[in-house]
Length: 163
Image (cartoon, rainbow, N blue to C red; front, side, top):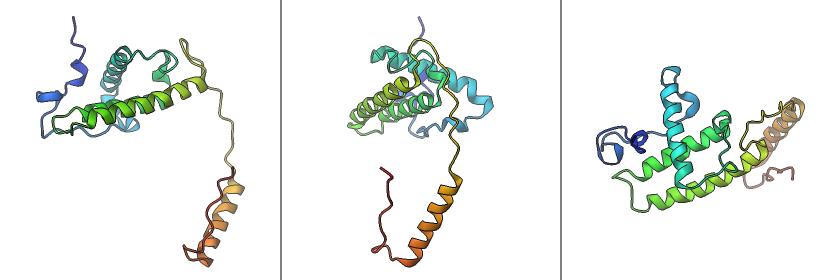
């Protein structure tokens, strides 16, 4: 039987890290090609363990979660949060903070999965097809710069949300 926590151990110290090796957060897009296969394998192991530990079904984690950048980024961040929350140097309140993050991220994952339409099978996302409104952007930028030139911060009107 393999060790289900092997993916969490990165050093010999307690919690998988020694005191001098506090892990940095993972910015998924910055993982170099040489490290990508290992990073994917570690994330997959962690996600499968997370799915089992918290009974996360296909409404939260579709079978194709790894094909969706939103899911990958959120899961990598959640893994990093858990890792940091259980370091020997973490405060005793850190696990509760991690559980709050788990709650928040699973809510996001559920919403994103629902929007994707993926569950037990992958459904490719339709092409975005929305062109950026260059003219609107330019007009907004000119108006904002003009407003800033003619008003002090106290006099400036708040930005309009468009809602």
